[in-house]
Length: 525
Image (cartoon, rainbow, N blue to C red; front, side, top):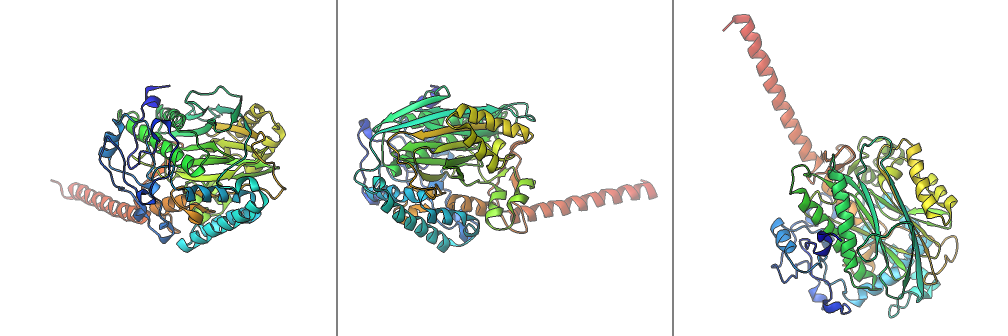
């Protein structure tokens, strides 16, 4: 492991959540569930970026994990001897109610009602907070239905099924046909050291399961490659330090904290050299706990689940065109050809903190998981991706090669990366029917009860609102790279007005110069 893996800095605004001496994490007093930093090396740092940055009511659903603290707090945190950079929630091993809720609701992915609610995401994303509440209720109701069908996940005192989890993994990356360098990176690890792929991994009892990650770097020259590699190394190194747990809420908090630590490391590295300034990376990662997968997402890389021949996207793109589609202001077909298709709402390393979107998937035996960069899904539709995974069967290496070839046949305009995993073992129940399908369910482990899960992405909605996505204006973007743009938090309306003022001033100056030249030529000095 690199030095960065061994002693990563602590991101701003996080509580120290790592149990001491490897002890089992205990539930703290609910009153301690605050946004302050609990750190022996630095004073408590309050959140400086909150949901008050939202520009519309649609973004008013609060999520303290989006908190971003001052650079001084980050610097002081980075000197900490503790490698446990933590989330802005309380201890991940928080009250059992949260764990019980996540246990029961995670199986909402297996209920067709939840799938229907997920399909309505494009309509509900532009609605008010009351719609978010109804989404939570829908996810909760569908979970109740699925609990009656599967006793294995309904007992909060004994979550999950005993037995072996067998996870087969393969991966592939390709520079594509247009780019001169590959700025994508991927990795699979269970102890911090990379696992050579393809590989078959068995997980017994509470043993640590592998973590899968795909990053799509940006920043031009070699900077994008640096950002994506740092993010992969730090995330895998951080997750190797996480205590084994079957509590999904606890695991999710550690996972989110680790992504924020990776963001901090990329951001800090970018400040060391002008050559790296502005570099960043997307990130999509999957971690396993009990019988569920927790998916972390920043940017527009994606995660999919293939079950019984149906391919379901279990992340939501954090991009401008995706926000416009969800708001009903652009069709899917228009989004594919939009000039804004490479504009993302956030990326790791662009700022000193990042808002991580988490989703929860109840796994079934035989599930096939796919992580990919937009070099694949940006030029290949879901239908060919689905067919390629089906045709490859259990040969995951062939599946990855086939997906890369699909993107190259489509022109290969960007770097292409795919990581494919297959879930087996007696720990997991087989699908109960063809209707037992996964669905997108966003998971906020800091929340309790039904509000912890929604069938729309509150994170994506907040990011879109901050960027000022509107019918009559596009958000102002920072040209971070030829592959992606990162969105400035300044609203589009303010940016447009400022550009208009600058434009008028430039025209006035030009007219004055031309008038002076004309007068000189006509009348002389």
